[in-house]
Image (cartoon, rainbow, N blue to C red; front, side, top):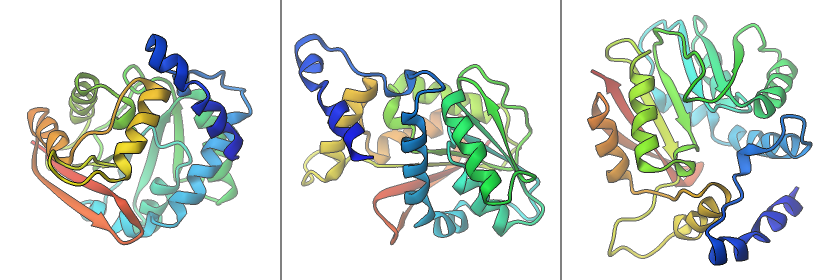
Length: 232
């Protein structure tokens, strides 16, 4: 519900005065806001998931997908629908995973998509995987933590397997500001982080063990883009 966003924006004064962000994802796992948040994200994801799944471009007959901070599981489900041999593991916080399990079960895909609860920097990522998703999360991380996470995921991917980073990227310096500029303030308010340019994130991927990093835009996601790099 939109009232949560107005409530979160109410913390802007404390951010400006004292530098205190809200840390949106630190809520108790049983907080009812998780239901609104994750189901809202799920409905948005349904508009683009099939188009995005095609761009992920997994190898032939993949068997294992890692979806880090995948919440509602829709992107994992879209890839499983596209690849009959595939099963996915979503790693996310307990509050998010609790709602995601419900959504996946309601879609009749609990046998294809399972959940591991925990912090993405600490949870067992298992592997080796044929691909990994990292969607709409790096804007909640500092550059150092983003690179750390890229390297951690690289450690559980097969050589040549893609890591796909879908996010809202800021425009390069000198370009007219877009929606990422305003949302960057929101991300700073709710997690203390920011939006980054696609070039910045591409450089981080290459420094973390990925090659052939390419960018893909989508008709159904006009302000977002997918960066796809292959594990070296």
